[in-house]
Length: 350
Ligand code: KG4
Ligand code: ZN
Image (cartoon, rainbow, N blue to C red; front, side, top):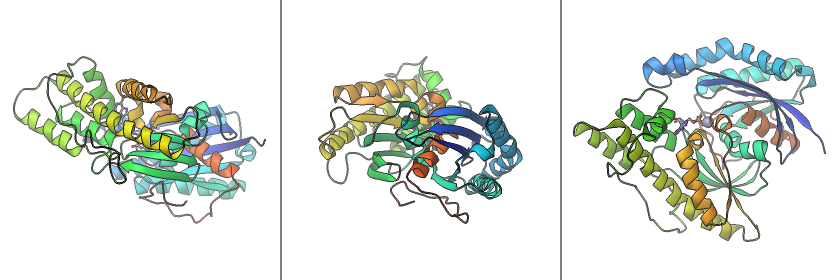
């Protein structure tokens, strides 16, 4: 079987990242280098990512990050088979910086360009790290997305359900702000929750218990939870750790309830799989309490569960290099005038 080496670039949010990955589908792949420069400190004073500042920061450091990734991998552009970059969805200024850089490298070195959907990067990470075979059920929980998908191929996704309002990570980030916890919100809410009483404050769990049917049962909603938390804070002194724990428990209950329905649906759609696999991906998958709760749900439905290591759940370029490698292995590459996309749903054709 052919083994490929791919350079990947990621610039769709506030991480400037480059990585070299080697391998072949279904994985696992070898991560030869993985450089992630987080802009957290640059954005922290604003309490969130400022798109214009992010694009400029990407522009300033991306060249150096790419050089470092090649050096760490002890390789050169000449030895790379293809150059992959996130082409969307994300903050368009940042996406343009990464994609344009990849195009320049591809043209200069005479290598094929692969335009990668950032969400496909998250979705296929468990193949890079664990060699998970298609098809698998994916719970994608990140700062911009919250959805359940059947993943059947590097370009083949079946959407089971998505959020009707906020993404899971967005809910964490907003909760952190309401509770006065520092940016970035998710990890700080998790930390606070470890010292709190999750039963202290009763918070709503929107859509909980909705049965599985054609149209619903696998959708998410977090806005009611956020509103309830805001109300709680407004009503007077809240104990921050207890509020963080109560909030996190509500998110866990929502994720577990919706995922349980999707497990049933996936088994119905793929009855021949002996032990189907649930993969959890995206930044929120780094949350240990969420991972443990989902493990219980998966096991009670006789599913295996795979959660990539935290550093591959949050944004990184190894996942982009790998998603590019998977497409390259099918013979795909993209035209040099491929346009960056602010919006790019996974179930749309590439
Ligand atoms: O996948 P990601 O790095 O970027 C996007 O593509 O959105 O996800 C970032 C999101 C942020 O909302 C962040 O607060 C959340 O993931 N996150 C967490 C944790 N670590 C990151 N949420 C809860 N618990 C965590 N430990
Ligand atoms: Zn992401």
